[in-house]
Amino acid sequence: MNYNINRYIKKEILPHFKEHGFLVHRSILFKAPIRDILAGFCFDRSDDAMYLVVFFQPLFIGIDYISYLFGGRVKNANRSEIKFKLDDAHIDSSTQEIIAHIKANIDLVLGLENTISFYRFFSERQKKDPHYLFRMAATSCYLSEPDCDELLQDAIDYIENSTDKRPWEFELLKTAKVLQDSSRTSAIDRIKLLQTWRMYTIEKLGFSKFSSGNAV
Image 1: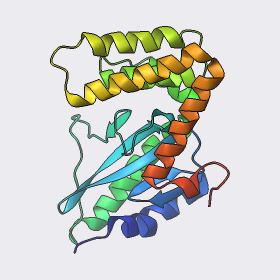
Image 2 (image 1 turned 90 degrees about the vertical axis):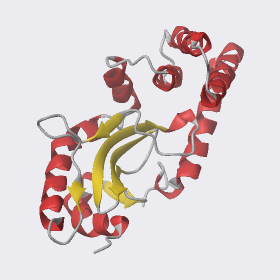
Image 3 (image 1 turned 180 degrees about the vertical axis):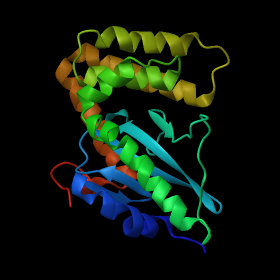
């Protein structure tokens, strides 16, 4: 059977987690209302199967796609990504496994939907990745952390020093410098810029009606 993922999540998965404040939209089981971090579980379709992704996305970065940079697909005891089969012979067992994995990760999702908790958690897991460094620096700026300017400069330096830059790296560098320029004007202007990016991301992802103050 060709399962409609969004309908499947609403019928088979959501009832187990609605009491925790979760909703479903665009194949994502997420914690509502959305504030600064989109936190939840994405059901990543792959032919007649799917992967379950635990993810956290800071919305004040200003992008128009779902990112798994902070998070990843659930894995088994052997550290292999689990592929849940959706055919009629396996759908019931897959559903039970998915529910079990969500329950195993739900405390983490509920704990990191807060921007400060998100920042503290992922600051201890720094990666030498341009997107990771910039997004953590931007989060630091959003929280007005004392070392936010230093972190932002470190991210810019890392991107600038990379060789054979790809087009997206030039765009990322441009974005980072826009944020840096706003920081030089005033902390208020920096926050206003990040809040503008937040509204842009929420709108582009189609989650406006679920954002703080407009939760359903």
